[in-house]
Length: 365
Image 1 (tube, rainbow, N blue to C red):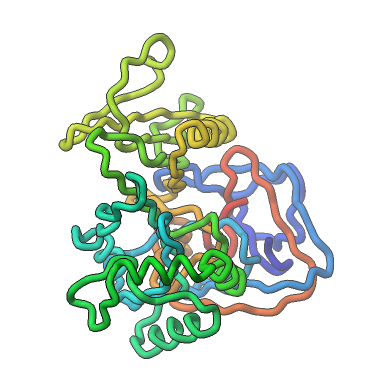
Image 2 (cartoon, rainbow, N blue to C red):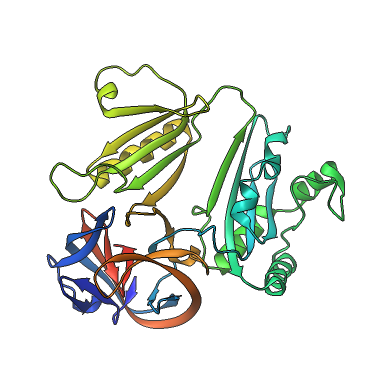
């Protein structure tokens, strides 16, 4: 939700969110760099609300404040090198804290996939990662990590012992540590104090020792499909990665595209024009096959962005904004402040596109 002075973009102008009327038209992203006209279904409000707001500032000078759970669009920029303090969960053990100078780079290295060799995980291991803070200072990163270790009692030792570690206590003793510490409750306390949410990790990885390729995730990209027949933006793309080839008959054969990767795995693609229908389809499918849902939005022509609560946006991440010429471009987050606030809050609900432009930022609505 937004404070009352937040500016909402309408055609050729902007209005305070507190003055936004039902059935009025606003500017909304409709996919692949297009801006279309969205319709305000209603404006939800809360009077004299005491809460905290996250204030996001970009290098281009854009600022916005909203409640921690507000839907935001951002992506991790691998070209921005910084120290990341992160919380990592391994399904077979628990939670740990770590620091990395190149988190995404390390996650893509073969050596980082030690989860594949966790033989006590009954054939499957899932890793989830929440970035607690990004900083350019190693001293600051080490301070945040150690402070969190001592305050919350979350271990900072690796899940998988390595011979190169200065202190190597072995995998059996490592397992004993996680078995005797209630890391899930301690991790929840850390996330709660950071105004972050357990169901919104920045990274999810699933490993299996099965030789047969199996589905592991659903890539759900809002506006990621082809242009809609009615000309109102783009359809929503649903991709099932790592799925085995299937003999689809009848309607299924007409609506599902199949692509074979260089590794011999099949990727199934489905598109839905209606966003409500697409979200229901993804939710049902994820429950049936126990698949992780990776939700993105294709606002710009060049990049898709993850759909995250604003409290999960960190320094160095990239966000889509509208420049003073009305064009969509990318900007980098350089500052995040948590402010105490007491006063009215507003949340516009936009039909069809579910987003609007507030203070120059594309945000969920």
